Length: 310
Ligand code: FAD
Image 1: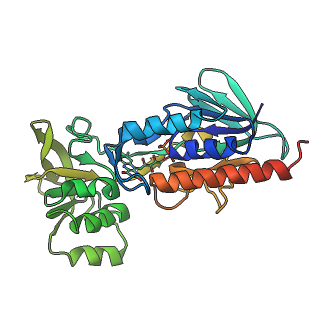
Image 2: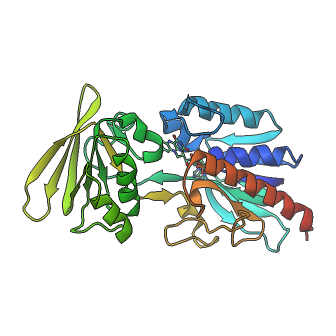
Image 3: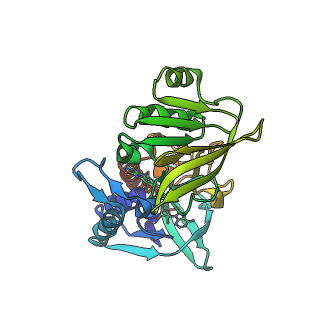
């Protein structure tokens, strides 16, 4: 059995693996796709010490860094179930989709998240070609251009405020008759000169020209009229879905499905820790995920030296 078994090979899982392996404990990583969301990222320019890189290079570097240590990497394997130990300090079981099982004294859950899609024609086609999901990451690519934010909840309105400082004009498109964000954010949004809010509008299609986004269509839900707005970027901000469905009720999760952790990455199950976008850790970013991965690994090590095997 492993002493630390990490589920997920994104920045959080990779950082956890590096920290665990450097303690000299038997470490394994099982991941559906090593690198995680980073694989789908064009440019990364906010990781301290790495002024500029792109997703595929960064993902390959993560894997290489982990391979520098004695870590078992089980890539392209999907985990289907977690079975807690019969008693604290005992072995935790991780069941794979392919029928295999792995056992470990501690487990670090780092399965990340996925952006919720708006599911309109053009979204998949123009992903990374104008359709974006992370304003902190991709906002600067649209400097001086017109963009839309789909979604008027807290993340959508925060994104619009953030983008308004960078781009030329922001159109906020909300399905419901009112913006759902906190009042203070809505007030701030309305104070900005380069933002137009479209409520009660259903996004129907994203169009492109020469392989890049060129306009957005939305329909008035009251009158049925169709509007086409010329623009170069569309930020979809209708939620981030943590990849935690497979855990069911074994580990405590928030109402958003995030694994509830404390400052040390501890979950509700003894010996099970969690890190990164799949958890309640605030702000879903690479540097945050990597930091929380190292925290979880150090906490798992601490648990191992303090909790005798039954
Ligand atoms: P993830 O990267 O999501 O990795 C999760 C890992 O778990 C993957 O290996 C996945 O295959 C695996 N996994 C999931 N479910 C299972 C399962 N059941 N069994 C086995 N393995 C499983 N952040 C920045 O800081 N800067 C940026 O410029 C930036 N740009 C971004 C651009 C895009 C398009 C996207 C989508 C995100 C961007 N982000 C950026 C956010 C950043 O990518 C995430 O915050 C970060 O990757 C989270 O790391 P993580 O390890 O928690 O999860």
